[in-house]
Length: 389
Image (cartoon, rainbow, N blue to C red; front, side):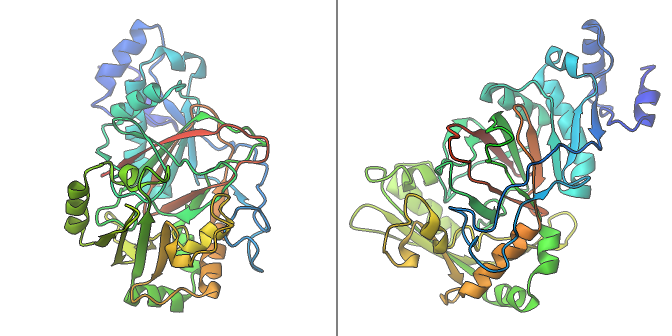
């Protein structure tokens, strides 16, 4: 029997699962600690709202209806948890904290879509990898992604390696792939600070679906979205197909593309172009609710018109590394792109990263992006994992 269990279960704090408790509590007692707990707080962190309208390097920020600033997080979006005894957080193995994170994820994520865990003793990517292993979540790889990122550990990646000043548009992760991740996890190893920018906005996709023009939703539903990739060889760019495909073997890459039903061609400069059409809406695998689920704006070539590395190039919009159109090839109008961006940012919320923060999102219920860092910021280190379940 565990004498403290009834009190734990009755309290407003989050109790450990019955399966994990026999392993965790004896160890806590051996260390002279109370039974470990992660508790929810209603004290929302202070937020210095980031400028949106007119922001440099933010796609669409010059349109008339663009929101002025990023919303501060609201109660339960994300729901915020921290160790009940912060001073003792370092005394428990990270795998055990991971088990507690999983317990809360299983119970709470479907309610709000996004959870923020603060005060965990995470300082390195190895620390985070241990916590992730402790969650028991099934990792998914990033093969076929269309951005810049580096694999840092078995299940750990850099979140994005675009220039720090560039703002990444709102999207749902790998939503163009046949088997997209169900959860996305981010961990902060180096914060830009409260005045440094670099937030990870979290987006209420239920609100996005509610506010989206019904006629545009219907066009996307019936005509799908075409995604086009034009990715350089590694001899020409750090943004290359070898990194995106996690392979330098052309035959292996071709098997991957063929297996997904993608069309492709190898170009004379050894770059790879491929394209495919897929749905822009998706039903949640658990609830069956329909969500706006795509990377229509984030992967549209218009983003590169304000990207610091590409903004002076004169190529056609479809020749940039990524582009989107309707499934039949017709371009999205400037009005449609502006509307989608305005709706997505209107439903987005920000907070300042702290070292050790872990953010867990349901990839269907919640989108995300990245605010550009403010001038003078030299480092922001956020790492990521994606999961099958």
